[in-house]
Length: 136
Image (cartoon, rainbow, N blue to C red):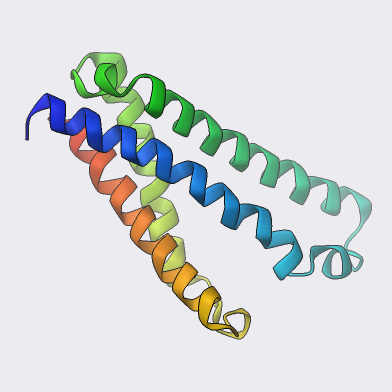
């Protein structure tokens, strides 16, 4: 794979990560967090929101860095490889979680099912592209 092609793939991953944020924005509503979290203590509710916020900020950072620095990330420098390794691990863990989470009861509409499978493809693609960039 050429460096130019890898840069384009990293750029596309950056754009794809912005679309993942659309699904992320639906999670609190689709999973009825406000009602479900009422059962938890205030601290636990706050922690869920903080953790969710950190994940969103991480995805935004991955996306922005990938879109604006795709050529640099594809050049194989130590910093580029380290970033890509971290991104590959981040998304690789997310792919594994797709197999662990029990989401069946929440995939009640056709577009939710398709979205779930599309997200799985995105997570796998991100893992493979960043993984390749980390080891090339």
